[in-house]
Image 1 (tube, rainbow, N blue to C red):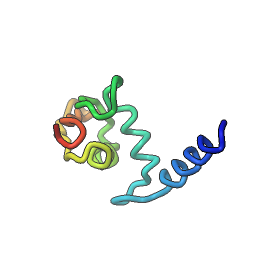
Image 2: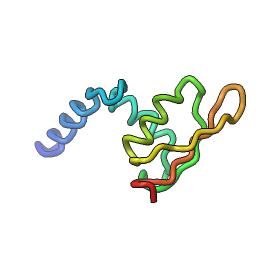
Image 3: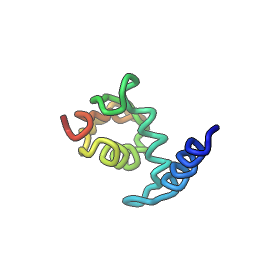
Image 4: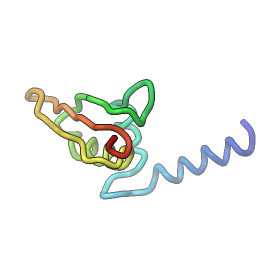
Length: 89
């Protein structure tokens, strides 16, 4: 790994520790990576998340896409989350 790559890794590790709206950026990154479109993170997405992860999932969509996602109950265990994409395209 080059020195520059190492600096990027270290910067991301520091960023992941930041708390925004009560959630660590690293936690939001983790759930967002499960929800995001697989071809590009900026694209709209539909995802199922556990009901207990609602707040984290919504905050992650807001943090990474800049939009409040639509949330609908899917069943007794899951919610469906819909985001229009980066910058609310």
